[in-house]
Image (cartoon, rainbow, N blue to C red; front, side, top):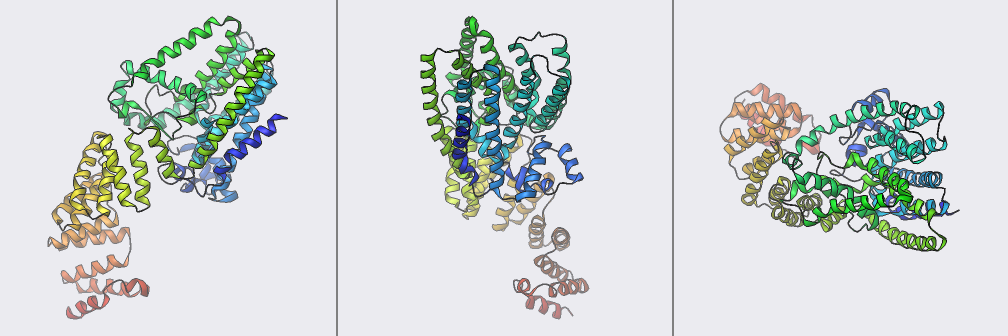
Length: 590
């Protein structure tokens, strides 16, 4: 009877995410997965083909895309539905974890306490309240159903049951590649229950390992660019620091589970942003060694302890950053399912404890659940505001320069350029290699009309991006804008040439180049550029400029043709142009 109450509590805690006003904008992946993803707008064979042959936010997840497509068919881009489905999956995972732990430990009270902490723990907030983290709750759902189906089959599950488990495994792996650990988890279950680890126990897992190998191959291929982007961070993994990173990642989630006081949308990798490691990093291997010695000395419960910790290690292994991928060393969502192994230890320990100890354990667990519920409720509301998420990141990691960029960018989008500049400048003082904050500072100075001050920041942004193999056309475009505003037309051409070397020019870029060439008396070149702008963007202003350019070159028939095109435009668009002046010039050129 406690389970329905646990689920109601989870719904109450995460109700804030269901009431969020929208999906998170650029920079938080919701636009790549949902709001701007044309591949989910229809359930068609072409889109199904794209789900299985494409990646989304660098993740191979066709089943997740299929679910998003079904959601889009039901409620379009209304965020309430997406968050409600994530909450529903979290409740289902809670119930499945209860059933699984009950089957493995036989302790109903222990399974209840573990399910309660799983349901309300702050480490789950990111997976439940962030729409783009749907892959975590979705793969965990299939993963737990597969484990429960396998456990229910006894020590020698039937072929039909194994086929069902394999199907569930495929669905989990195609929801998120982290599910590839299921075959190893099944072997751990066999070992814990005393099954002989030979013969059929091994052979029946071979199809599972084949699926894992295929998914791992795809995952490596899709994330290889991130590994290359790691640059000099890879070199640090060849030293003792690499082992310290690994120890930190392993211990991080254990600490978060016991004392979740450092929640953040991102836990930055020190290989990227700091010159040296804090002293605490050198203590993590010793702490892990102490845990290992304690487990080994506890002979009576060694098998259960090894199973719980082994499940945690196996399930968390794909996200341990053995090779650095991206800029994060850890993420709360990575522990959503792996912590089930640690909850198993709680359920098992409660079942083995004497009656008096059980009362103490239950009291401590209930007090922890109350504290966790309060914190999770507050954290859930943060996921409705990118600005609050950025401020939370800075409160946890004040020396992380990208945190200042995230907050500054939100103020920049809100057109509060002075606040945006304030955060960008703080970011430049924290980290000199982060070219994004320098670029943001330059953009804010442009909005504030402080052009001379903006240029040095763009120069640093260009030099910094070059170290990562990025030509940074955005910074060169900004430099072109500044040069145009200051009427330094030769510099406009230089900047736009650098843009064109990195990416095709936009219609606006061709228009700026037309303006610069016109004032540099290159009328033929100006005509070519305004014509190129028209090919990309047929607009009234471009026709107006080209007509004037034809007049400069004494090409009256072409000028009259563009004038006729302008006359066909709506009146409100023509009123923005000096049509009488153009008509007068055409009359004079008669």
